Amino acid sequence: MDYIILDIEFNGRKFASDLPMEVIEIGAVRLDESLKIVNEFSSLIKPVYFPKLNNFIKKKTGIPQDELDIAPGFPPVIAEFEKWLGSPDSFLLFTWGGEDIKRIVFDTRMHKLNEAYWTGLHYFDLLKGYLRYKKVTNDVSVEAALLDLGIAPEGSAHRALDDARMTAEVFRKIAADLDLSLKQQYKDQFSNSKERRLIKNAVRTMISQKKPQTWEAFVESYLAEKIPLTDPRKAAELRDYFHSELEKKQ
Image (cartoon, rainbow, N blue to C red):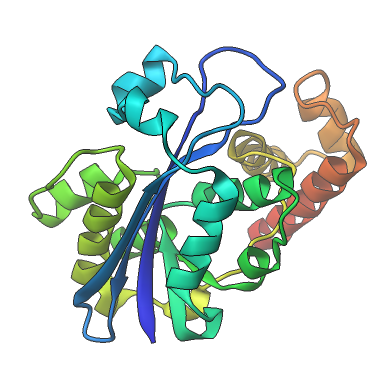
């Protein structure tokens, strides 16, 4: 089985807008079973919305505007990438966090493409694997992980292929200590990490202070005016997370 290390860049923005963020670059490296890099994939993607990069993204990524202007759109690039990847049974995908898979799934939906390839494959969150390896809980960047592991970073941070190469070096260094059975599949998530962290901390407080440990009490004491629960999918997800955290702490 091959190991594919994926990284994307997307045109996040610093201003409020209802328009979607889009993938603007995909980079990936393929490692064989001996963890040797045997192939690479790289492509810019011209976005439908905000085709002109704002100053923040331009400075962060260094992506040249003139190259983005002539780049192909998402549909042909993702088709080419899926062909390069091959059958999902032939590789395990690695990402640093879950945002990359999420963004690809969202863009396939936006372009009304079949998302089954991406929702069906397994991927391993190397960030979570690294945190378990180091026995820490605070998120770290790939660059910080390289520094901690004594690996000199090469290339440009926030360019997809260079980031994929650097992530691959982290994987190669700690591969023997990873539990790859903890691979996962994409699942829609309606809450964010800040909201889930609020629940985790609140459950700890409720138990230590011997407060009523019910969802209704939690909503009244901790969620009122902090997290809107108008979306029933989000409310159900947070309620399940609350009960899960409560069970673990008890």
